[in-house]
Image (cartoon, rainbow, N blue to C red):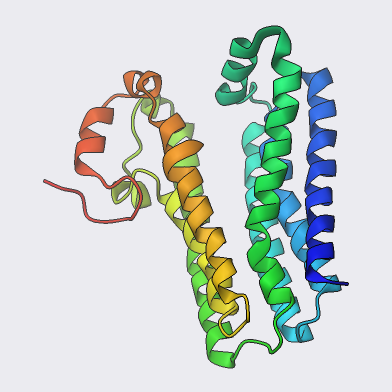
Amino acid sequence: MSALSIFGIGLATAIALLVIVWVIQLFTRDASLVDVVWSASLGVIALEYALAGEAPVAARLLMSVLAIAWSFRLAGYLAMRMKGAPEDSRYAAARASWGHRADLYMLAFFLLQAVIAAVLSIPFLVVAYMDDGPSLFTAALAVVVWFVSVVGEGTADAQLKAFKARSENRGKVCRQGLWYYSRHPNYFFESLHWVSYVVLAIGASWWWATLIGPVLMAVLLLKISGIPTVESKDAADKREGHDEYVRTTNAFIPWPPKD
């Protein structure tokens, strides 16, 4: 099967999964599940590419293991976070502002998410269709980058969860652990994760296409759906010490804070 055909299957998979979530939220009036399923969809797509690809088996196996492990760790964390919680404030606000057209606009938003998932899956596709597998050195380096990024993101998530679990921290900014060095260490490590496939694909004919992963993810988190929503004026007004935290601490790359 050609790379273009399997990419189409990947896109169709993402659309099907997110349309199912859209139907579910018609009854639950809670769109938070889309984050969980979106994350998991990338692991499913990676598996499809690995099964259909023409690269050496070792390359496809490594790519799929890394992608699925990342995908389901993130999906599991998001599922645990939404358990028993009200609808994510982003979706609740969108639903309120869209009024009677909310369901239609939500469908359009979910379809856009499916397209983004398909575009982000391009690095998986490049690896799945490499003519030759990665060298031992590049494979090992890719695993190191993946390990650092996934452990880093998981650590940041756990530290923030532990901070929020303490009642005395309610309404305060987390400045513990990795959050002392970055306002969004989870976003940094999430973007770094996509560099794994850039490294893994070194030597592939379409290697440059893997750059879409880290670049697109960084743009989404820095400019669109990540930091702009978390650091909105309303959020800043609700958290004690926010302005000082912004003044002294890098938004993205972990670095010692300013004096």
